Image 1 (tube, rainbow, N blue to C red):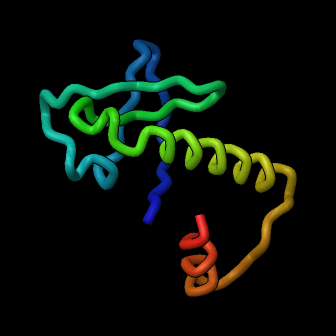
Image 2 (cartoon, helix red, strand yellow; image 1 turned 180 degrees about the vertical axis):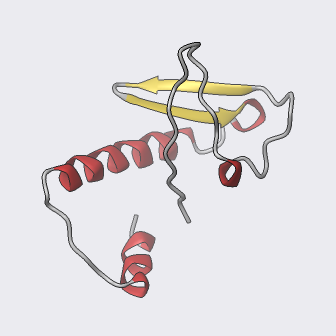
Length: 89
């Protein structure tokens, strides 16, 4: 299941990956950053070619969802229904 967190960039261009998002990332792991239109995708170098197409599609859908949310076009639902809808992605 997807996780979402918020962080910000420092004046030095550094971004902190929230602790709950870096459970499988170790000090020294090489990371790849992919810029696709207005999206940034961060992947471990060893996983670079795994599921790249799906990652780009997920990023696109997430961006579209945030835009709908910002416009007030969202639906409230309980967690069970949300997880059922999420599986359709």
